[in-house]
Image (cartoon, rainbow, N blue to C red):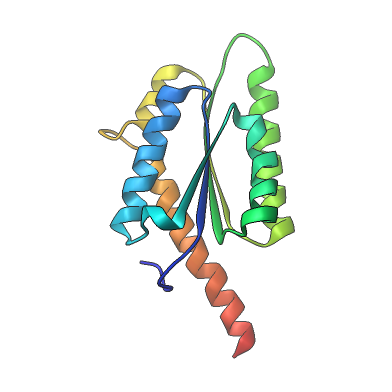
Length: 153
């Protein structure tokens, strides 16, 4: 449960591997609602792929001032090294933005070796990492608030 009444949450979701990312989004939104975070406090932005997530996060922080961001995507290994490049750079940049802007950014970009692994992690009937990412966002938002308020006491 969140400690504050209303929180601004941004979710950036990649359209690449859309079947997977839409399941992640569904699990994320359902879990946020279960924790009394409703649609009017959530901004969902769609981007084309995982490499577009960090730049979009930067723009959202600059123009919308969310309190927490959840990045959702699915990078699935193919026949080339592109998988490694996308996974490594999106992860590195998301972490960098979280530190730079001092807000929690949850890296919900799945990186799997095949489609079946991605489906297993995204499916509402199975593991649904989207729900996990939402719980992590709530926990980190509370943690950041605790740290900020402990300095004021």
